[in-house]
Length: 303
DNA sequence: TGCCAGGCGGGGT
DNA sequence: ACCCCGCATGGC
Image 1 (cartoon, protein in one colour):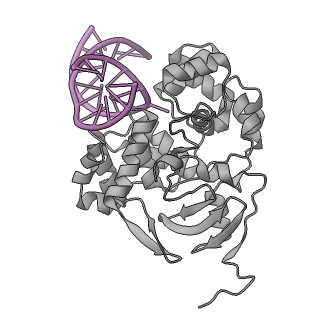
Image 2 (cartoon, helix red, strand yellow):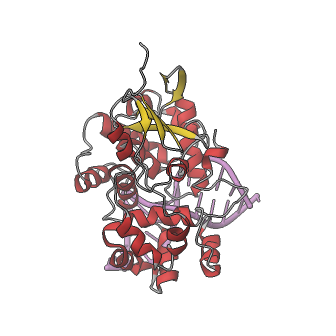
């Protein structure tokens, strides 16, 4: 059936000052975002819309409001940016990227993302995720095109050996444990505390992974995912010991603690800690063009 | 070529 | 409340 003009399935999003290029480009893959537009996945991980960076959208399911929510357009980050403007780590981010918003993913995939960041570099972790999607090759047809989906918990459980092929190493057992827990309904996705607590019940999921997953899927910013990278940068910038970094972080960022961690990875292009400390000392606290993938340019490299 | 990296758990003291 | 080690993998 043909869509008529003025149909609610197409239109223009209310961006409320957000920069959709930044929102879609951040931590994305080339098969979902091409620089001009990208797919937005909601709830069960199904594609809900295609959104262009100028704000136009084509809705596949759900509502415009749900798409805006997923893209972070309905969230007021003015309090976060006010703090960031006078922060020794994030003032450059606040100045250069005021239109950035956090695009969320599903609780399941957010947990997998967290596991793939454990004890590894940013790039290696995202390569694992890229290979997981390509190896499981789950797709759906939308608007006449085949679109990659993230593997589901049951996909993982029916072919667990692909986890190793994707290079996840010893994290494979943790991802498999997560898949079982999600499939069996043991993970409470209804609230921040419950989500983190039930995730912690899976062997191999610690506080960093649980908190990161909660930030990336439910916008739970109250508990910052502190890893060694953030701890050392915070220690240097705030003049505290690494062991005291979390306390200081929470004191400064309050309800925005988790969001500030994500922003910092973007600001410093997720470069390894040694280089990140050098950039901090030189005051290069905003994304710079590089010949390697960064959180903002990942999509150009992993197509 | 050996290191080592946005953790974690299990074992110590 | 600390400290220490091993762990799969791939990049430098």
